[in-house]
Length: 397
Image 1 (cartoon, helix red, strand yellow):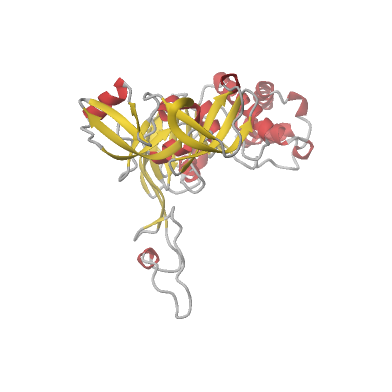
Image 2 (image 1 turned 90 degrees about the vertical axis):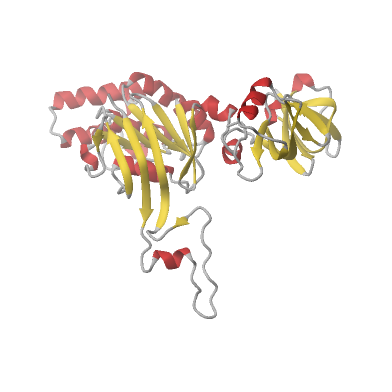
């Protein structure tokens, strides 16, 4: 078993050289100087700068969890607390039911793959992979077996006698992963391991990681800012912003039912379209009114809105680009740019005072609209997302 539990985990960095309360208030600077501006993603309390706030998550044995969010959201800090590289300011961390808050990193039975590979340049691939096993004074025969098994899994056997400088970026990352898996850790931690690779290599390595997790019995916690990686790799994904968890769910759950405006805009490529619209509750039905045109929501959405006693109100309406269709008599939009993508055309439009994108399969188009041309669009009520103007939360949940 390799379960991980994070209970109300918190990370606070004390403000050095002064009182946190003073930093919080941005106390007046010296005469003639401007007061420093506080970064919007930093929460400053009397204790200091809060990087991770009340993070709770139960990770099952052999589950692949992905922490995803923009830079500075606290995902790497959370991973480093699991690894023991950052002190936990509050809350409890358990691995296999054992409290780990004050256990040294070397005693947690975890392995970590870093963004920058962190290979020893003077050692061969073989020695890099064998190094941690040598420190444990394992028999040479056992070390050799583990290294060669890992090399075979990662298809790097032919590079075992090379040094890192003779390898490509993708090969170096395979070595870094191999160095981690030879230890057969309970938990494998991966901190943006593909971000230094080009697009083609990232795609290839994503496939390799998917194959890898099927061949080794361990639990994965993977950090990335790339939502494509999150959607393709994770059994569940944890969307973070400003140190807080925004939503936890399977990739499909998060894509189909975003909890709030931030998740809706972060997950999906191209990003979701947003409009200022009206939610109308009438005769037991719910409609969204955009540009004077009403679209009835699906029975499932109506049932959830009724259960939450949602009333008519101004909303932010969200519709994904792939769910928008050309429609006679629909909402008017002006074409800004047309992008031919082969099997589809991405139309960049302006509608109801907002920029939007529509993805239209080329088989559905006779002629590609030109810049400045007016088109009309609509959408199905099953794919419309309604968000509160006040809280930015999805009104269905």
